[in-house]
Amino acid sequence: MNRGADCVEHLAWRLAPEQGTRPDTAHRSFKLRLPDRRTAPVSTAIMPYEGKMSFIEKLKRSWKKGNSLLCVGLDPDLSRFPKPIDKNIESIFSFNREIIDATHDLVCAYKPQIAYFSAVSAEKQLEKTIDYIRSNYPHIPVILDAKRGDIGSTAEMYTKEAFSRYNVDAVTVNPYMGYDSAEPFLQHKDRGIILLCRTSNNGAGDLQDLIVDGVPIYEHVARLISEKWNFNRNCLLVVGATWPSKMSRIRSIVGDMPFLVPGVGAQGGNVKEMVTAGQTANGTGLIISSSRAILYASNGIDFAEAARSETIKLKNTVNQFRNTA
Image (cartoon, rainbow, N blue to C red; front, side, top):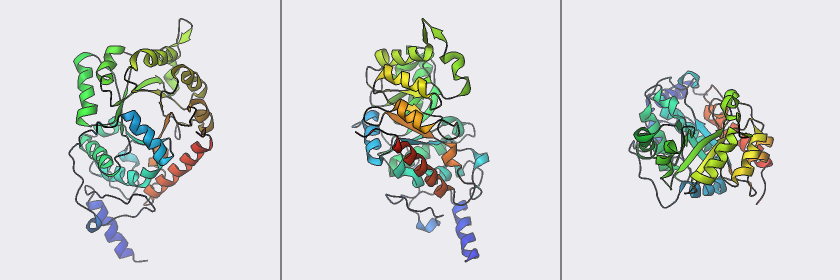
């Protein structure tokens, strides 16, 4: 083995984290890439939204194209970056790019979590990550996990943040301040509005399971959104994988409305129970999100290959329990 050449290649990759590449259409194996094998740097400009296809249409095509219900959550935690990557802000895009290139043919969506970027002043890295997906894999929807919730002009600014500044296909929203907190988002009929319903965290039941008029609050939320807010047919619900019996109940209320499903992987949701409870008759209806279990599957130079292997494993597990159309 030529250790000197390996070191040079490794160093060159670390010193050029900003440079981008358009990868092959199908990922086969991960390899650290020298700068002279790269194309021009990825543009940081946000591309115009392609209004010819709504988020729901794009999602349905993505489900079919990759035969996958999986979404990779992009939660770049500098403290957990694998050893080959420098733990600095400039490396966030490099890390995200390698994960995306390694998994793009296995997923139906990507979901960057805004707090992991804004906490370290890495909003530019978020913009570059979104632009990279749009430039190289335009068929894959991008969901901004922001869980915004406010009213009036502040809600309007949050809408601009998601759909103008970051130009994402969909955004997560907290509905618990009522309709006026969601209205500015709902008016964008071509985008997806993903509203919290029954979340995956341990404390979710403190409020969401409270009984009002004989029914838990999360059921009120599901019925309200399904019957009153979904006038543009662009609403989705966040329903945690950790509560399959509640997911089944929500599915019976909202019909074929898609669910964003966190809680798989690190949070321990049971895949078989979740898929059985949440899927629609044609075996879709779910955006199953996994973040840490995929992103940090390895702490070594093989982190992207390990992420791909973990994604394949989860995809195959999910597909075992899907209905066939």
